[in-house]
Length: 298
Image (cartoon, rainbow, N blue to C red; front, side, top):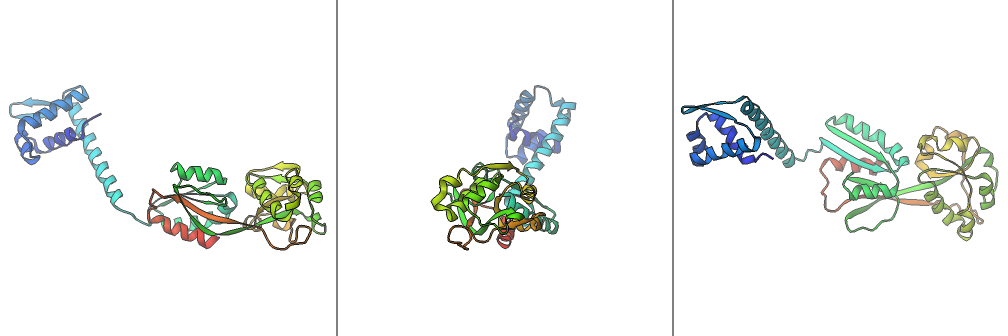
């Protein structure tokens, strides 16, 4: 590894062209300058200058090192300048959320990036646990989850709620909804399907949880836009957040259950939407607009 101080001395020597003047400008002794150059030559394993009396000429290798060192110094200066700035209209924004929320959120983020082209938006759709792990490992900076979590490294704030919908084939529109009828229909599962089903069945079928946990799976799909396709074909029911259902191309071909349970309880089931980021990592200013967009969407 090349010693930065030696490189600074070498650059100054090349630009000044004189050992004595280099020493004066760097507040060094002339032997100190000479020693830096010799040490640098030892590190690269070849001569960098050819002495000609009181003058010197760069070797071919010395010329290449000079250009490399200048670029290195420039990169460092640029980097330090970036560190000292916090431009809300420039930089990378790394966000993660559920697939259903991503479908709602991404068009708004794209519009924001169009307004500020020096922003780079990275949006990952992922399950709750992976979002939590990604925030903790610094792979993403902010995440939106629906799972209550307590972790000393996380800052957690409530954004709102997402309503969960039981979505059935259209032929079920006039059918009484019960655990038995849902067993007969079967479930179309997806990455968050069982999690959502447990939330919904725990509310509406709390006395029949053993049966609810044994509902047969008739299909699985991890593409959000296609989850309601098999439901629209009569192959099973599923559970999704309301905004995912309302934005589905199959909305008009499925039935959204309104009253469930033995008491026909119309109270809907909702999950909290939680914003998480690391306590130890202060969010750059550009994230405030992203958080505002998320708040507006939910």
